[in-house]
Amino acid sequence: MQIIVNKNGKDEVYKTLQINQKFTIKADSSAQPVNATEKVSGEVVPLSYYDENQTVETAWAKELLIFEGQSMEEIKNVLERKFDMKIIIADKPVRKYMYSANFSNESIDEILKALQLSYPFTYKKEGNTIIINK
Image (cartoon, rainbow, N blue to C red; front, side, top):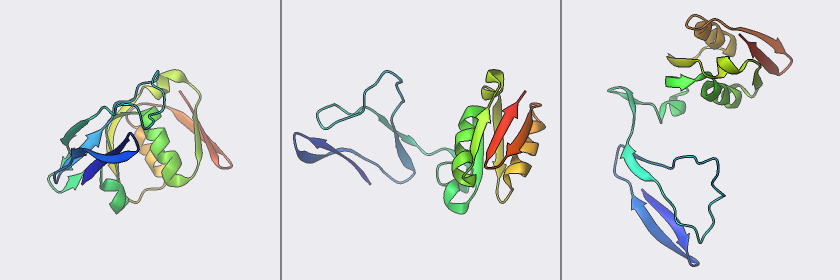
């Protein structure tokens, strides 16, 4: 697989990925959106493995959710997309709770109840919204 960038109106190969590699770009909150004249920066790194048979990056294709040292804020974003719900974390400290877990066919309630076992928090559903409190 190749990473292609547009440079001066022409597509150019920036990086070539081998099997079991991924291309990552670090988020910079002060960065402006990349346009055709800006230089792309990133790195090619190996895929992350949950176990010898499952990469974290491709788990979604098998409808698996694998979290490895991820914050509740990051998990919230994944759950919102997967379950098409809005999740509000009302207490800032809860956003920083860190989790490592995997789920396959669990409902959002089952996932939240499992996460509660590591760090206590409460949640309530209001229509298509879930509100999480400490």
